[in-house]
Length: 461
Image (tube, rainbow, N blue to C red; front, side, top):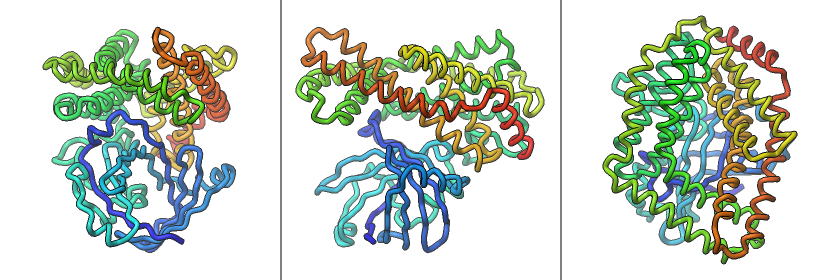
């Protein structure tokens, strides 16, 4: 048993110094939620762990053991309704210390917390946190991960002041059409806040946040495409697609740097670091120039902001008056069918464009399942998590395709053939993992999948 000595801090948002970095994806579920001890399952990258913690506050006792995949999978369903998903980023501090910054996702989206671990209580008490760490919440039980998993975010600011909830899920008893309008409007308001306020201090993080919300809006549109009708759907989808494209330039430049970092981390000494370093300098310069150009342009976000405001007004008039399941069921089944067909095409022909197409279909299904996950969390959460994992694998593959195209267009990059080979090797690994996972997610036929979801929904409603 080891002692864990740490202090925890609540950040208002992701610091600019961490924007655009590639972190470690973590899923945690709790087998117990007792006051004196917790038993936790965690999937972090390829590691699957069971952890027992006792105590509270600054000093806690901890025992951690690795589990094989089969045992982990057999225990994971027991954590239904008590789970969190987050991305962990690491930032060095003075005197050899470091902060682990957790950016929460899904139901806790918008919450950012940092922990600093110490080797003694003396060092912990002497530590003077930098201002960017925000307010200290060490020992506050509301921000313990097990409590967040069970009860959600304490007093979320997005719902304060009598404002409608922006939660990205349909609620029990909520009229479905009204709920979808609320959800879309919440994404619009969140994206507007990022572009009109957060972008002043951290444009890169604001762009990333706004683009995620635009993708969620478009997935919600696809869910009710039949109800909207072709003409209205095409107009609304085009509105948000063009808004996203207007934000893509500087973000795409940053992703190339992140993807090169991940490639070097995967292959270690095999990667030609000196040559990659030269290429890195070019990529970093382009990233910084794109960010600087946007930062000096007073009208940089004028077009997407105008589109979002117009969309906010238009969403009130969407004809979403169908029955409960009849409004969303056909869209869910269609997303699943399209993803299943995309997987079959890719299995027969590993073309990068087909990878990108499958990824978009997986993203749609992931976002749409999140909207109804409250219907039966114990059964739906595993599918939601695995669909997210699949989308991430395919996203990494697509990012490598973009990086490879950049490499091919460069004339003066050393070790170019080796770098190209490493990109292809990593893509082959990602594709094999994605196809294997896809077989599990898309095992059922579309009608059977839709029938199962309808049964969950009917039991819930």
